[in-house]
Image (cartoon, rainbow, N blue to C red; front, side, top):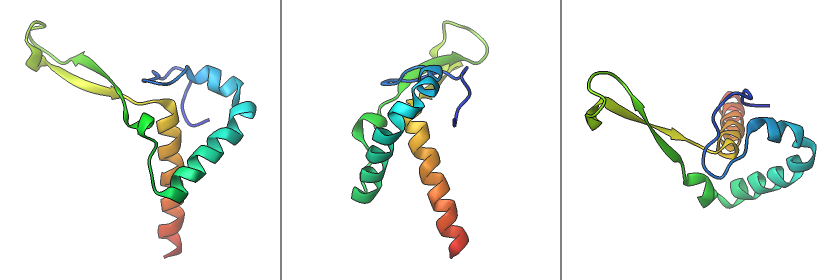
Length: 95
C-alpha cells in the first residue's frame, strides 16, 4: 500500500487500515475510477476537498499568526497522485 497505517486520513476518506483489509474488493472500482479520470483529463471534484487543521508553531497560543495550516487530503487523493506520478516518470524516462 502507498501509505503507512498510522497516517491521518482526510475528508471523504476512511482509515488506511480499512483500505488495506478491503483492497481486493475496492481495487477494481478504484482502478476504473482513476482510469476514467485520466482518459477524460478530469480530476474528481470530491478529491479536491481537504480537511484543514491548524498546527501550533511557537509563541503565544492565542495569536492566530502562530499557527500554520495543514491540509489533510483523502487517502484516495494520495493514491491517485502516486499513480499519476508513476505514469509521468515513465513518460519522461521514455522521452
